[in-house]
Length: 225
Image 1 (cartoon, rainbow, N blue to C red):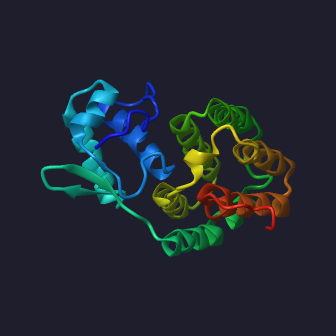
Image 2: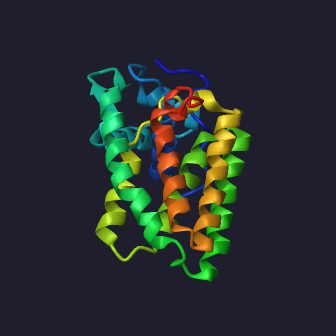
């Protein structure tokens, strides 16, 4: 069955199947499409005002990521992810991402910062408007653009894949909250530190930012952290 307000509106990017997949992935990653819920391709297609074909194609790709499982003659069920699995992804990301931004502090060309700050602005805008698709896509683009300044493409590719696999089940419940605004603002904070060449500061912000996955973005209070 479908929920009348479960999917964030499509953004005008990529082709039709890719646009559908981006929106569905954001809805699943954020918990907007809740674990255990069953969705039919025709019902989702009606929400997108498209045919069922691109929805089925998108769901099959998301099935490869482990986000959904096909249910014969019914549709697709959003898979449940264990807290342990999320914690393991976070642990690996903390081994990779903070040291990477430490290396990038003071090493990113000065003329790259205008575009990076525009991407950070898009994240803040997505958060303020409660648009989870825009927020998550802008977040992905920002971190990918920062990490692209590394001279280790294998590392940046691995980080991108881990970020894509990261589920944020409490994010949908954070719309219009102070926590989401603070999380969005951390991207500007990170850029300030990178541009200033503050390696230790950039590393610390990146570690804190990843920690939100098992904190705010999992629906948990971080006040004691």
